[in-house]
Length: 325
Length: 163
Image (cartoon, rainbow over all chains, first blue to last red; front, side, top):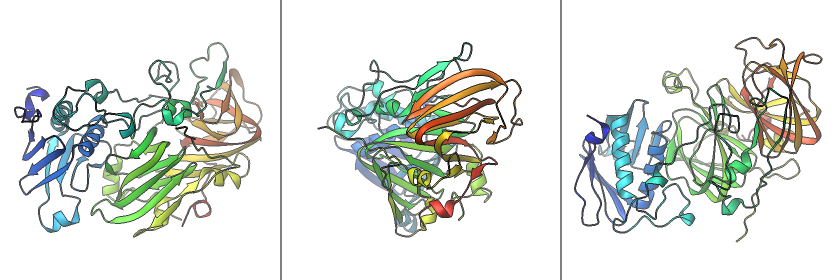
């Protein structure tokens, strides 16, 4: 049976949208809201918020750790299987015993989410775009936007610009974003001796980022073993509250982002971290965070992609805080 | 509306802050690249990020650096200023296989010239594994290096981080 065949959906409702069922969860949308039901409760959130979060969860293949759509709904990646939860990381739901978790094969949940994203995204709405650069997601069903929601995720093998690897962005495919019109577009001067053209390599990372057509979508530009540089451009609000299963680092390359940091398990507030150009900070392994970027900014997300880290952290063999001092 | 993109530099940077509600500021290891570089010695490799064996190092680039080599790829990103990077393909690798982080080379490296790259702010380059490299900066510049913790990595977290 193909994955498409395991996606359970209804006929379109009055607004034109299908409902989707996976396990004991059901997902429906109307003109304004996404509605989720599970055996012990129901939840509603703006379809705008829901689609932006759903887009990241699909594009990142459930990412590292926990992707909270909001304070109630989300997923936990176990790299092969995924927990879909409601209220699991919300202290009130847990105390009331209304929380619910179900584990699915990653492919099963991925295909269900992809089908939902395809059906619920109208032609004028791009969930990856800044709200200032896209149409509204609301109203009755109106077409689809497959090209926007199935963008290829950039992942360099060595470094952007190295021959045979991901290439730099140009006007033909990636015009400079309106908020980065002042960013220098000069490229490094390469003077390679004959025979070394493939290894004498460099590119303008800031120019590359100034041409990003998506927000809050890290993509790999350089790889040092399992050390991954995943820069991204940020505008408005990170559409998910990310609870990493490892330490994650941020380097603010330009402008400013404020991070609201909560306890990863309970959602209680722990800190607000304001990062300006040149600032470096770790996000510990036991928190969840959501960023607010008033102007489009360049953020270097630095990840350790080792698949062993969640197990090592759970066994107390890897730290949840970056350094002792 | 015209927007101004704010990058930092040695001559103009503003450090952010942590508003602690129920936590310890040390958990965030919060520093600023330009502040670290401002107080660094030339070519000192100061860790500002560490994730297990992997590090991000800030390097204050001033004049000509010693030659170095590394058994794995490294990636310098110029955060301020302008640099010239020289690369040499070593006749014989000098860094032991599997060794993390770069090592210094005494004297001139033996090998073929690979070429040179002129880098300015925002430019990122490849330092290929087992090449020899050195930088030259006419004016004080700042590098952020993606690499692995090595013998010459300087860790002074208490001096550079908010607490």
